[in-house]
Each structure stands twice: as structure tokens, then as C-alpha cells.
Image (tube, rainbow, N blue to C red; front, side, top):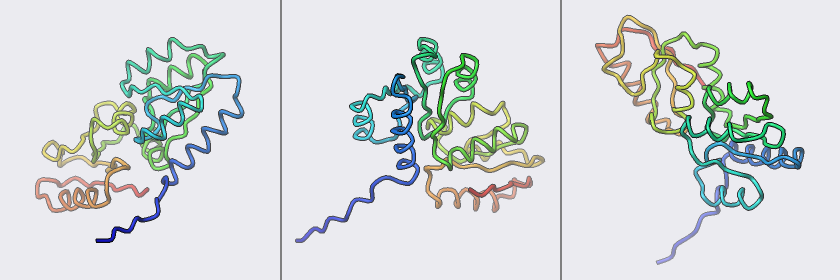
Length: 196
């Protein structure tokens, strides 16, 4: 039997862009300690490499842990970088209030979803994704109670919804959600699909 190995694909454009930005920030702010909130990517080798290069990665994706961590830092010596999956609204508010230097290098697709909810906070949202994934947790921190995550049964047929999806989900999962919503007699509300 012969096994042919394919060439490695490497990183997606979001990770490549994020890494480039990280190292530019490190060069431009060489006198600061640079902290990345949450794992930069779901790749232990990349995260280990970043640690070796002097970046500090605060692994927890829990909001209270991140707030507590930031409160221990010095805004004159420490810089905060949001990882590729986004950030909590409350963390952003704290950084602004404490006048930290911070950088948002999250993936452009994640940022697209964050921008939508920041600009349309009063809309109703139906979100397709894993509620425990950090991207969705961060996204939900910008919303009040006007959202549902994967909960078709609770859709109010008299309401309209903006449909968003976790960016790391497959297009097939998203399409199957649309099919389910379009073919459900109980759903009379109009779902607005926002393209990436």
C-alpha cells in the first residue's frame, strides 16, 4: 500500500493576518508586556510558539476570570490583545474605562457578527452555534435577552429575527438550519439572513 501525504494547507487567512498583527504589535510596543485574552487559536503548537516568543496568553474564556485578570494589570506596562474569536463587551468596557492600550485582531467574519449586534442591539437574533463556544459567548455579551441559540421551539411567530451563525460552523449546518426554518409551519416570522 502507498500512502501519499498532501502538502499542508497552513493557516487560514484570519490566523495568518492575526499572527502578522501580533508580531507587528510586539515590535511597535516592545517595552510592554503583551497579553492575549483566551487562546489565540485552537492550535496548541501555535499557542506554545507565541508563549516562547514572549506573549502572555490568559487561557480562560470566562468573563469573570478575564475581568479579574485585567484588574491586576498595569495600563502603563501591559497591552491587551483580543484573540481571533472576539471579546466580551464588559471586558472592552473595562479596558476603555482603565485607559488600556488594546487591539482587536479577531477574524473579520467574527468582527462582522460583532458589528451587527453592536449596531442593531434592539433586534431579535436567532443564532446557530454552540452556546459554549467562546465566539458565541462573546457575541451574546453584546445582547440583552433578545436572542435564541439553536432553540427553534421558542421562536415567536409574530416576531422578525436576524439570523447569525458561529463562523466556524460548516455551511451545510447553516443551510440545514435555513431549510428547517423555511419548512416549519410554526415559524411565520420573517428571518433576515445577513450575508458575510
